[in-house]
Image (cartoon, rainbow, N blue to C red):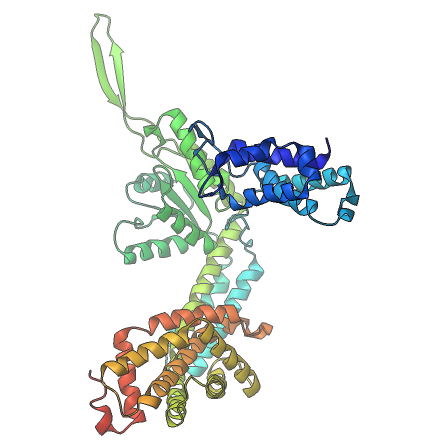
Length: 555
């Protein structure tokens, strides 16, 4: 039997045995006929091949778990990731294609086709067996002294900019913190934290670890996930200001707890995960839970740092048989089981003490930089907003004076381009007019592509129509819309400049994707009906005489 004959018949038999027909106009026996057609006849009769493939193509084949068998109505389980499924369907289409092209294609020969299938199947198997890359699989960059010094330098730069641009602001406390950072790189004492949810045994563990012989300072954070966001924030701050944190659970991780672990690890915090109260589970349950925990935090916390403990094991009932046949029972306290945790802590503190100190100093430098940046951004925004308002009214007046059927994006780009030049003077971006006009044109295209122009115009037109606006019917929508879109562009530019400021020195070009996300977020924040009504009212007050606008939009 020729190789092509074997493949075609194998695929047909596979389909007959492993799929059910859904929504097909072909009778069931028709597909059965395909499976039992003489292969030689099928290969020699081109019309028959086309007819059979047409039947297969018109039949919607759906393979699903627990699907009904084609004959008998029994249940069967089909795994969607079976190589035979992928190979069978692929071979079906490939064979049909081969059988309907010129005869010269078959010069490859049977063995060449077989070799191609083997290589393709092997590649597919190797690819399917490769583990998917997890979000946390890439290890966070190891902490070095140079990296900390770089963070301190960045904080110093931002603080100097604040001192220059906001001279009236008292920066004594921030400057003192900055001055102390280099010295903290060489400290010897460590602060370690015990954190986690409520009723997980944090207090008992903290007391055990805070024994007099301990050289480290141990603190317990507020419990996570039990009160307000402020409580969670306070717990997070305490954990991040410590050099190492032990996150305590009393069973498997919840999604909320896993999210907290990711946030802490994202800040370069050294973490251990302690499975406490293991004495309350059967031995086989302990093994299962510990394995589940290690799987949940794979790529986030090393398996060696996920440890089962019993900080305050439950009392055990003891029964003693007396000589006279009576029995005595009492509850006996059990010794805590934290030796594995102590050993792991000892190894970490011996091998990674410097890195723990550096990581804490890095977090302190980044926090100082964030505080200084918040002050700087607020001051720059105060200076940027009048510029945005000035150009939004220029755009409104231009569109109102000469209204057109659609927004003139070229004119809007020219006005927005000059606005970007003025805004870039506040932020360390320094756009030329040509660069700003190019970016402005891109912003206009994004607004059209994202549907912002259409949605804004419809919303503003609806507000005007609901207030019987007639005397400026042509230009009002264009004028107010131009002002609104210019404002969105300016607010988005502010947010974008704040995000990319630190990378400006690297010469990074305008990031269209990042700006698109910012633009969508700004649009969502500024499309509330109440805001639009107020904006329309203030816009019309500038575009038309007060005597006419007073009755145009009701408050």
